[in-house]
Image 1 (tube, rainbow over the protein chains, first blue to last red):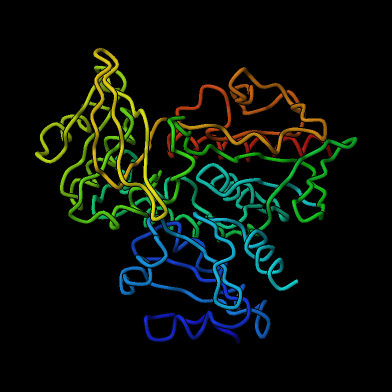
Image 2: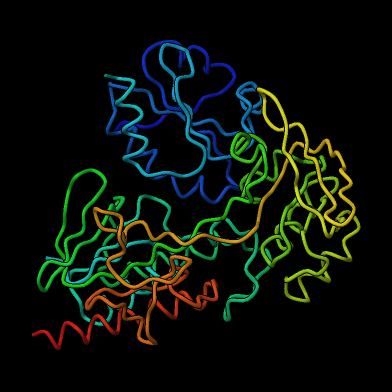
Length: 106
Length: 313
């Protein structure tokens, strides 16, 4: 079963550098983040081999959060070949996330 | 065909699902696009739901135990966003955003409400970049920093108290000179040293740059005096708008009777003006917007659905 990738300061830049990547900025104390966690897990399976589905724990990875100006979570950022191309703030539907990934894959 | 389609998975929808399935209906599905549990999952505390009195638990902790119970009797859930509903002879068509459709004998709409925007300059621009409607989500980004809270009701003062344990100072801006919040909630806020209540005032502007909000300008409505606060966090709790979009037809007209605020007119059994369509929770007229009353509505709708289906047979 495909699983999402946990990103840290060490692997962030290398992971987003190529292809389409979705990054979910979350924290354990954030209710809506925990609510969308199953959606992120399903997306990791659905897009296995097509797009990278990742998570950043904003408590542990504060430098990445500061770099991208994250002040509200969940914040879901979409990257293509290393560039930030789209983002969603707040919980949304699985379809909404999938549409944004597909738009970058097209 | 579904016995009942429930739209929305907050306290009203979940309770409707529990009562409908436990009451013997075999084919009941909740359609919600991901965030089961509703608005209360964003809340830092829940003190007024009888039987649950634990101030170490958040709204999310509270709703997690609901899921297990409500799904124990065969209720199903699909991650789908509903676009609209139409009545076709004796049954309903439920259309989804992704183009799919499902048929149901009855529909319970429990789509609730969402936090209202206050309408000051910069609110939309900095939403998610310093302007927030969720203290439990975003409070920690302002650890040991000052923040502003806008609003004077229960939610505003509860969340101000939550923030006061994380942030250095909490400035509560309220347009009136008296607060609507319940006395215990207000007194607790008054006693907290780092909560500062600023009455007769509004947010004139939220300003900032590429990295988000840098500060807020607060205007005293009596003197027109402007105070500049370099607070990078602004939490807005100024009431709720009902989510009634799914009740509009293709031409944008409501399929059942609503009032001027877009709330759905129901009787004491949660019947709408369209037979077989029921509404529960924040979306209905005169809703107290409380978890306990939403749950009560959910139970009523499910019992009504069961007797409606029996009469049809």
